[in-house]
Amino acid sequence: MSRLCVIPARGGSKRIPGKNVRDFAGRPMLTHALKAAQDSRLFDHIHVSTDDDQIADAAAAAGAPPVFLRDPALADDHTPIRDVVTSDLARFTSGEGGVISRTGPFTSITLVYATAVLIEAGDLVEAIKVYEKQPDRPLLAVVDVGAPLERLMEDRQGVLRPALPDQFANRTQDLTRAYRDAGAFAIYSAATLEADRDGAAALEFRPFVLPRWKGVDIDTEEDWRFAELIKAGLTALEGAANP
Image (cartoon, rainbow, N blue to C red; front, side, top):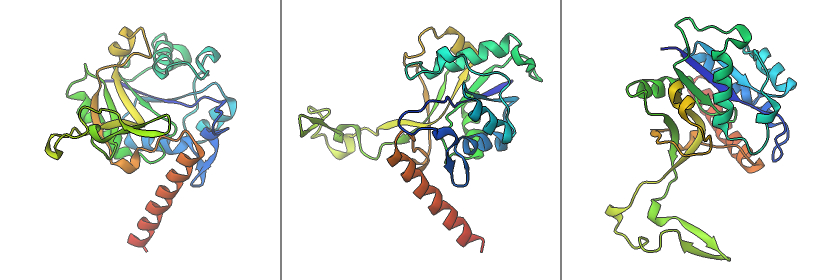
């Protein structure tokens, strides 16, 4: 099985300007996810998918120079991320950039988010093991939201209301565990991506559950600070364990 890893990292982030190359724990943010992919030793090729020269330079400095830049038409706020990955796969399949897998055409594609600063190589290794037992079904990294589905609430004109009012009073033993996308990674077969003609449509993912602290999806400054605090705590724990 030949594996491609794609790390989408476009320029032009509005909520956190320049976030993909902003310093996080001493180095550009995207290089944390990139290092996890490199350290896993899983992939025939790792491609940082970007339209931005500064991001491309940061990836190159970390040992993964992009072999081509992303089409600007796929670098706006509205393009589904699967369209980006599908486009990259098609370009590699056509031979662009001269990337040739050792074992033939890429059969699986792992999408790793550049903002996944807390994942580790071992997470990817274990996820690939699960995925390859049933490679016709994509796999999505998720985390437990921390509350049962029936206990979730929403703000309706300034008043908190149960999202599922007819189930809010369910017995504890009948409650449903709820998950959200961890914003970390997903794994697809090439056939799944090639058959998917609507990159925004939901796929029938299987879950790969990460510890909740690894699922910080960095979209805002608050998310960034939260991830920094977790990283600092981990670094302190490692220092205490290895004085």
